[in-house]
Amino acid sequence: MELPLMFTNGFLISLPILFTVLAMFAGVLSCLYGPYWKVRRVPGPPVIPFVGHLPLLAKYGPDIFSVLAKQYGPIFRFHMGRQPLIIVADAEREVGIKKFKDIHNRSIPSPIAVSPLHQKDLFFTRDARWSTMRNTIISLYQPSHLASLVPTIQSFIESATQKFDSFKEDEETTFSDLCLRLATDVIGQAAFGVNFGLSQPQSISESIDKIDSKGNNNDDVSDFINQHIYSTTQLKIDLSSSFSIILGLLVPILQEPFRQVLKRIPGTMDWKVERTNRKLNGRLDEIVVKRMKDSERSSKDFLSLIMNARESEMVAKSVFTQDYISAVSY
Image (cartoon, rainbow, N blue to C red; front, side):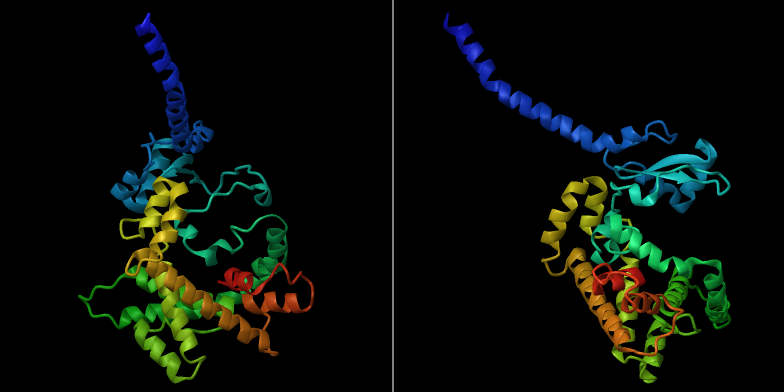
């Protein structure tokens, strides 16, 4: 009589533990396969738990998208960790999607999650703020305005190509560095109305010295260039990324807690990224404040357009606060 009773009592006592384990198991499955389940009808290669298709990206590099397009067609899915991306490889194909402002569950990529500056740009704002920002800056994307920027961009391209003439015949160069200099110059001129001169045939340090020798915003410009280049190169997903970025790919819910801890430990990559982002935000705020005080602003660059609209009360000042002005311009 005692054995069945002990067994029954033991079974009843273990039920809460059993249900807890089952609930945790269901939660893990939901976390891992929830995003996949929503896009399961979209063709794509088999998904590996936690890492998704990252091994394929490591194997093929950027060519992976061409490989998958040939194998699975012009529309396929690619998983960055557990986060699925729908890739449209055919520029002529029309794909119907919901209005961008109505997509409220937009996920933030793990590299962007460590950069508060990028989280406040147009792609990651929502609701009324997004609509106001878009309506304010949409004139910058009109064909007439873009056409007016062609000579400026062309001049930077010509300066960048002159750099090839200065290379020796057997000298190696990193093409991505040249592209980064070119992109930084275009951003500086189109967004802030500042010519950094990085795409000219000289090194980055020489460009900074040249800018400083002209007294052009003193160390503001050189510091901005340094912080911008470092911040941009850290927005990547590989084994050299910060630990929180890699963790965000595998278990997104743990990224922010680990980042908050690691950014306080000197020497870690998260600490370096946090320090750089803080300095970059400070430099951008200084540029914005100085341009706010400038009464003779042009109307061609991004920053001037936003400030002119803000001062003319065409948009609410509560929407374009100083931090959002810096983020949208950047």
